[in-house]
Image 1 (tube, rainbow, N blue to C red):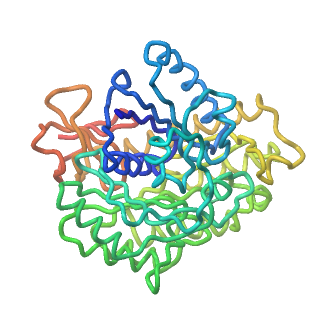
Image 2: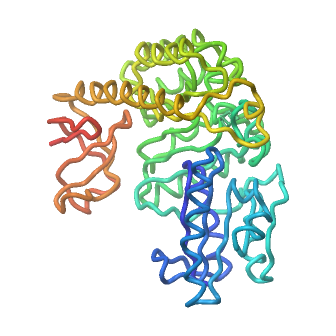
Image 3: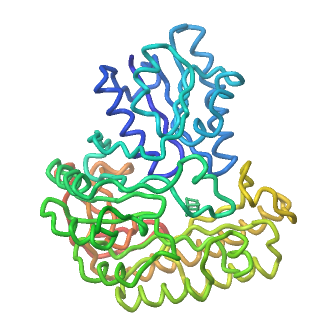
Length: 424
Ligand code: SF4
């Protein structure tokens, strides 16, 4: 079959789409980049927010018309929403195939046998034997662990992705080397909580040291870190290893201790700020990005102001701001004092405005400085420019051509748009 994949959600899903593409290609199917050519449309989905699920249901409905002119066309749903909704997607939304997050190896069989849904959880599945076809020519997402043990009270991930399991270190090292040799020299390690990576006697900082020794790559990043598990050893390794970028994504979620407790985040704002201080002391140029949420059940105006206050104090380089979205079967969905949508929206707007201003200042502060840019792609706006990222995860544009892809460039920051550095 000719298959087309549409991916929603986090980087983990981007990596999973590459994984399932590889599985299907090895089974004889063909990946196409144009949906019009496909006879199998796959939606790789996210369940973290209701909005993300509704978008996919809308997309499925809007693609169903293709079945009239092509009765053989099949629609498949994979990923977290497939795991969560299972057969309901077939019964209520005219989906043909549903494969849960641990069942991708059996997806070709599902197509061959024209069956419906396979969603049995397998909490040992790591897909460790598969070498994914990475879509980018310059950067690679590499999954180092799957699942999560943390059960933050608002989060559906542990229910759909199961418990933590880490991939063997030797396979990760081999995959990173292979990517580097193919020209993908910017590596992002993925896991729901990379700080709890554990394989035999190798913890996450030790894994980073081993990867830092690989000659064929230029840069290493990782997402996501849980503040409760971020160790002094990790900070030390980040400061010492030259390939680890001066950037960390450290979800704050709330600046209020009572809300953090109700979220089951297992840290206080004091602990979080303490980590930020340690990181900035050890790695002075580090950029800190975050996820932050408003409208969690019981969030008073005072609690919300504590979050704004924390954002002002910490000065994140960037923050992904969200409003709380109740998810079926999570503890928070049953809590009293659910915050009305209008208030959630109003608070979200305030958070976004505040962060936009902070990020703009962070970008402007770079003007005049020298930066190292890893060139990731051709610029979408100009044939004579390329785009990439600085070590501290800022988007940068500079003059260049296709030949520069996958290389490091030194440049001076000439101006900022507030979200992009213009370099020369
Ligand atoms: S750490 Fe918390 S928010 Fe992150 S995936 Fe696990 S349960 Fe969800």
